[in-house]
Length: 348
Image (cartoon, rainbow, N blue to C red; front, side, top):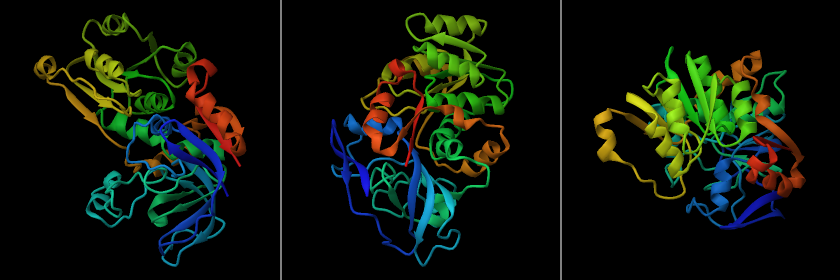
């Protein structure tokens, strides 16, 4: 098969690799028909994720068809059309039982994100999915690949790590710093949770227009005047919840600066460098700050809303490529601001 292989910081290649096979009875092999590139993949290429070894096939998002199952798989069969979750969960360990599969203990890393990280991933023609019964989602009729692929990661991440962890509740004023795909997912689902006002903050006019399409009531250009603009929009108080969806020190700093006392800050972005945290100034504000990896426990719920048309997830995809043209897709996504790109869709 063909796959995108990480060669170390700054190095990747589209190579011929051996097809994956069943290793454990709970495995399934999925033929990837639609996939996408994540911002985390960019971080890996930059060398920000030291736990990814050279030779690893990248990617942790995808939609495809099951072509083989192990003897222990009971919920899926050959021919099933499925979403491959970014989180692989055994369903049996203490963390999975508590609903926190992001720390699934079934592997030596003790983490649920293993695809494209600890084992070969989905930027390939086939992928082995461990613990298939708990890590795949069967697709209903009428849900296209273009709608489903963002349920692998982007939608659950924006919803769980942003909206839920941020404690968004009806009537809240919410700011989302960074209106890429994950930020847009947070904007969309914050609206579903009853936010009275949603402020999208970005440097890119195209993304800010998209933020308004996804439910932002206001947009603010990031930069020196951003904090003052947000404070002015909130009667001098600041927002109830700030969601950071970029992963830069300055974007977290902005998120912390625009929250009112007793507000909440939810950090979603993946940070590749140390981030100063002004505890000496913030402790008196009684802020609640959260961060973390997605559990992807909301995927089934979000899938129902996508299937019903309540969530127009396909709008997150702005550019479509053939899987063999992955270098062009990567270049487009890596230069998203210049290319007016949100998520790229790769089709077999």
